[in-house]
Image 1 (cartoon, rainbow, N blue to C red):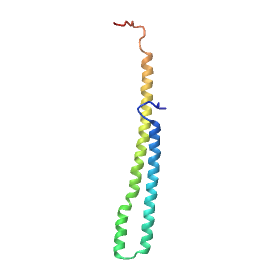
Image 2 (image 1 turned 135 degrees about the vertical axis):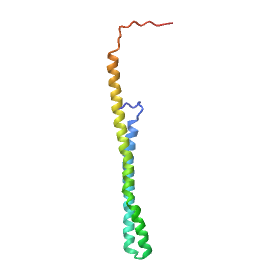
Image 3 (image 1 turned 180 degrees about the vertical axis):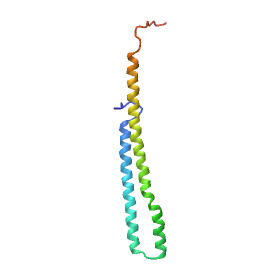
Image 4 (image 1 turned 90 degrees about the vertical axis):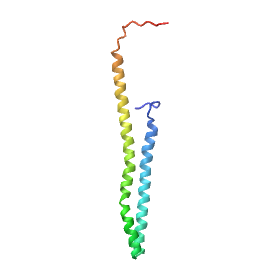
Length: 113
């Protein structure tokens, strides 16, 4: 576990990870509502202008999933960052412990004034 006073505030990172998930879900719901409204409009409006609007809408509607996936990629990046940081801290700690046991303590120490 990463200490609270370390360079990585794990609590804040965990909070961000959850917030990103929440925001991506809210965005997905908003996109779904827009799709529902457009589907309802298709039923009500039957003219060439409406057809053009619906065709244009469908051109960028496909990007909704890409947008949500891109947002979720930030969540994955933060999870990976946290995992790598923990791994690096653990590895460095092990190296320090190993190196500290091999320090020659029999070397004479003399303070200089």
